[in-house]
Length: 164
Image (cartoon, rainbow, N blue to C red):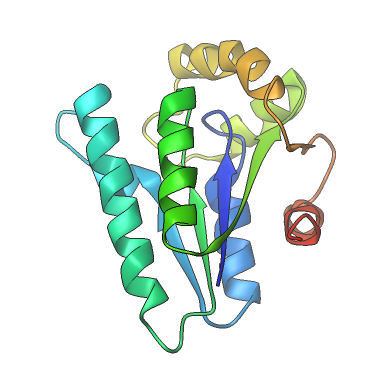
């Protein structure tokens, strides 16, 4: 079974691309990492991130045992190298094929997507600036896909074509 991990800054389109891939490939499960640490109020520290990784791995393990599940797509902001490594290694330890990609863009593309997402309460100017500042880190990672000027469909195709 293939597991695709989509990383990148807030608002870059991880969920949009991930759900598009899942909708376009029958038997694909979609996991949004944010669901796996949905605490109120939100707390993003080492303990809650480790919990989220464990929750994601547990879900992937369950999907692995499901006869109708052929692929899993995980979308989550992993701005901590250790969190990303723990997730990838956990997936590999299950004997699954894993491909991790990081979505990036230029500032204008990120702004366009940010302003189009009117349903997310995190889409404030303050959080945009946080996301924008994180672009440099995410752009330094391996397997980046630049989404600037690309449609959801074309980004999804690039992700799918990256699976070896």
